[in-house]
Image (cartoon, rainbow, N blue to C red; front, side, top):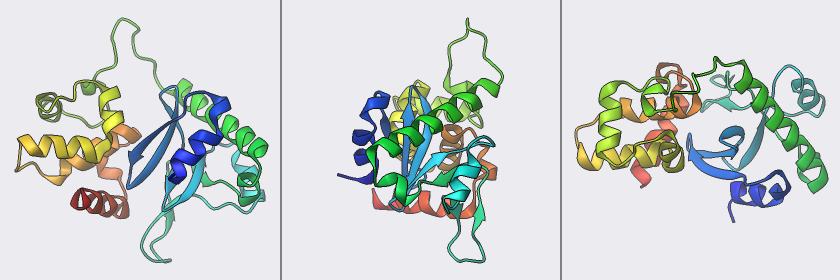
Length: 201
């Protein structure tokens, strides 16, 4: 079993934790909100100003990108490595995961709320223009939930099977939409990982 699947199993008491392929790794979701991720086999939980100090006291490192030590920079996504001592005990892991879920809920509450009469659509996702949405729909991806289930790489490959000349900018736009970050702000190392994931499929 992979790391994401193992974590989802250990966190069963939280509810139905979904594991989705993202940024060359995995995203951990509960009720549609991302509260954790796995990159290169290392698990990270979402943090904010209320919880970051606990991770730092435990010696945890922030989620970083870069191929060399000089390139490594903390991302703006707000994730810290789950301390090894926490991973050792299911009870501690569950407690820290619950706090990460609360962080995700607080972050969602701070975002401007959409009108309840308007369902969430692909067009409403950050960075997805009309042409991208049209290509996705032609490829059978019609809702944000379907995009999340496929992941950026899976959705890109579906579109490319219908539009062979589509550029990698669509791949970056899909990843940015899933992370709620404009694709132009994605780190270069993340883009390289996405490219590698496409080539390996």
